[in-house]
Length: 175
Image 1 (cartoon, rainbow, N blue to C red):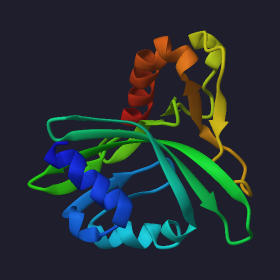
Image 2 (image 1 turned 180 degrees about the vertical axis):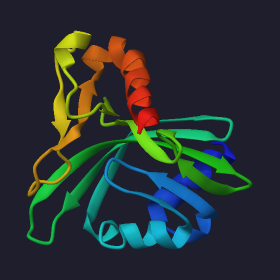
Image 3 (image 1 turned 60 degrees about the vertical axis):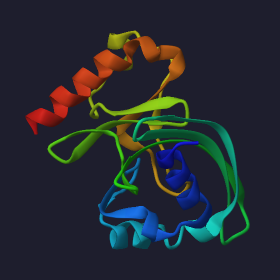
């Protein structure tokens, strides 16, 4: 096991902020933060909900670590669910630096999550125009409506991911 992989695994097991760089940045489907304090505050209510985790696949290439895993959660009301998660973490100088996504001028427009690419394609996006067979709107909250600008595109339509990335970049660069 390389140093980068060891650092990522030690953080995943402990949530010890000493493994994070001072300017650690996190970009997720709902929130993004920069800095250790902001990241830990974002997750202070989340980490206690985690009841289990199963690593499905993990690989390291230099300073990059990709982890694909299942995370079990139990809400305060007792509801249980399992999330499929893919993380890409960059480690430099012995510290975790970031969990990247595709972004333009600090705004996320695409990221990989749970065997799907998530794209910010706008309210007027027509999946049929791109020959997309399967999709759904991103709905990260059970009690809120879907996010109408964000589309989940599964791996069955991965042949369109590059074109959709370009489309999403074009949209965000115009605003």
